[in-house]
Amino acid sequence: MTRTHAIATLALAAALAAGTAAAAGPGKDMAHGMHGAMMMSFERIDTDGDGQITREEMAQRREARFEAADSDGDGKLSPAEMEAQAMAMVEARVSAMVERFDADGDGMVALEEMPERGPRSEKRAMRMFDRIDADDSGAISPEELEEARAAMAERAGRGPGKKMRQD
Image (cartoon, rainbow, N blue to C red):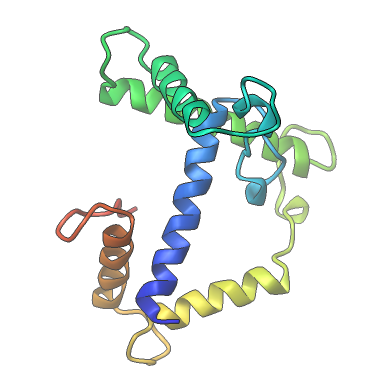
């Protein structure tokens, strides 16, 4: 598997998780924890209850998500409407994480309550690091990081020249 293909696969997985989270809407059908990625239930998407999800049902769900975010009903999403929807999703996810990890019930998560990273997630992170570290120097340069971001953006359909968010 080429480095570019691997990065594209990771980007696709992230996009699918984000799309599913958006489909669920804030606080609906959330699985617990970071790896649950707020999965929408099959039953919510299968609106006619026939045990199958059709393209039409997927399209209807997309339209419903858009309409729910379009708070002023003008048929367009403003940056403020998108931010409000994103914040609602973040708030719901944070609440679920606190509920899951807050062992002492104080409404907060201490370092000791955070889950340990398992060997699989650590291996995955190291494989990603190795793919981005193109020159095998043991460190990621700004150029290598930008190249990885550009490859992910291109695979995600943003094409060359369009920037991914940089925190």
